Image 1 (cartoon, rainbow, N blue to C red):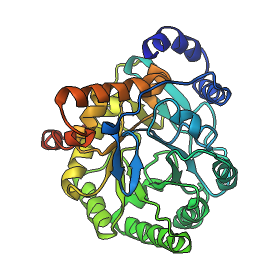
Image 2 (image 1 turned 60 degrees about the horizontal axis):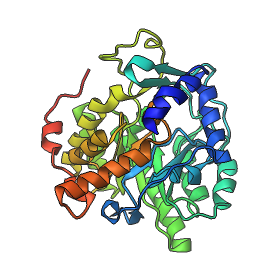
Image 3 (image 1 turned 180 degrees about the vertical axis):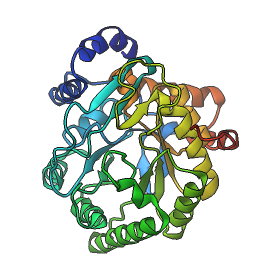
Image 4 (image 1 turned 30 degrees about the horizontal axis):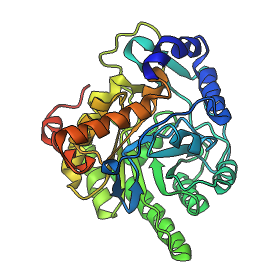
Length: 363
């Protein structure tokens, strides 16, 4: 299906504005016009941060911002999906146009700005689900929040009953000042308050929800040190590496490269994988890591795992390869596991961590 999509479906969708094409794809999933078939493979199952994942591939946050189609996405073959980013109050985000394709690079620049319908609309949809598939909730802060950390705490409290895990997103470049929360002192306060809220909710219902922190790929070695030390000190459940980049190094596309916003897709693969490996070295073997950035085939998925990821997410890859991509990737992973004669996909983790971590983070 990915090759068929690249020949016909992509041409039709790319004739539309990028945000219109996104809305159309959501509609397609809702109506059941887009679906997939894939085998369930016990060799791809893992228990990560206390959650049993049927396979290591997930849909990253940003696609299903308002929790409209989480179960439809799982039917494409994803082992889990992440909704959001969700803020307490609805907000419209930045002015349009705000999504730009870099076709020659198979990348996307976006400056959406946490556009979403707010906590209540998403909570209602998630509470009405009949499925038990794994849905993570990515939480953020309203642009005009007086206390941004309080917005993250509100997200934990609102979605604790319906989220299988949480992602604290402080790495989007499209909300002014948000990435400042990655600094050591701010991060310490954020994690303390968020994890305290999670533990309080856990005592009420005995369900402990893992909390992951999503970081930027544009951090220095010193900043990576600070985040790793704070994550370990606060006993964070895991890290997601990484969000979009502000770098424009090495792009081939002539159109849209000067647009402001975060760059995702194939151009981010090397940078995000290097940061992933460097963080694996810093946090050790026990802390779960989710690798994101530039994944669009089985080889890249496996490379993330070899660099140190327990789980892998994608989003932009599906923009270019279509809805059949997740099923193709997990079938490919099953074939690799069988060919290598290993019992579980986890056997590949960390095989290339040192090689990737030795590389310099691109400018």
